[in-house]
Length: 147
Image (cartoon, rainbow, N blue to C red; front, side, top):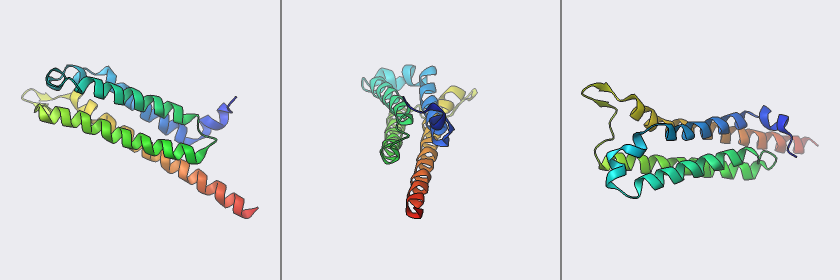
């Protein structure tokens, strides 16, 4: 059974959880699912949904790799790549249909803006998690040298 208090006390756990929540929040908005890109391209909705679900599940799974720091670092690096691919699919689909905009004549499109910012926020959170994991690895290696 994993030591939950040790896992929760690590800042990278918080970053991974927040990154997963940021990407999961993409599903709460209608922009990716009802956009003209969803009607024009058959690949758009399954690609976005698959990448969101896969990235969120991987982020949640990475939390439990806290005892194997180097493996966790590799998984988090993969999360960063998946997040970039998700952003590319999302932005690319919206761009090709001409709907990659933040405003319209009535003002700012808040739901679209939030959906477009969530992958960037998740990427930053995953980067912060990786930085925390790398500092843990360095700390453990320095402690091994002291012994």
